[in-house]
Image 1 (tube, rainbow, N blue to C red):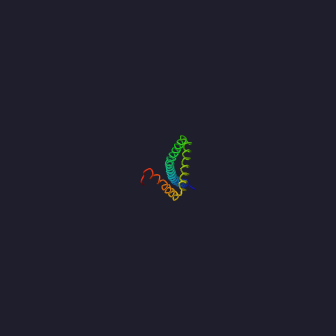
Image 2 (tube, rainbow, N blue to C red; image 1 turned 135 degrees about the horizontal axis):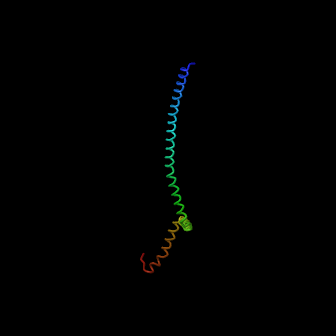
Image 3 (cartoon, rainbow, N blue to C red; image 1 turned 90 degrees about the vertical axis):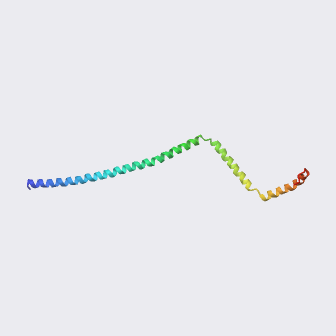
Amino acid sequence: MSVDNRDENTSRLLYEQLEVMKKQLRLSRIVTGIVSAAAVILIVLAAVAVVPAVRAVNHAERVLSELDESDIEKIAEGMDGLKEIGQAADKLGQVDLDRLNEAIQNLEGATRPLAQLFGNKN
């Protein structure tokens, strides 16, 4: 092989290597851009998700502090009062209204003569 032929082969190989390196550089830039965009999107999504989570934690802390300050015994007493009201409502529901009306009419019949005696004309 002659020196000129070697120089030509070397030049051709160097040119091909340069073209491959240019393609690699282009692909590296594309991959870097995609990774950078994905990182930015992940950071934005994380920031958007953190804000409601922080609000929820703050709200929970506020509710817990209010519960700590509240008087549990008074709440329990109020619950007992509600239970008593429920029992009274059950008892009222068990009253036989027909018998109650009959008893009222009997009482009226018994008190009418007394009312007339004391001057009431009804």
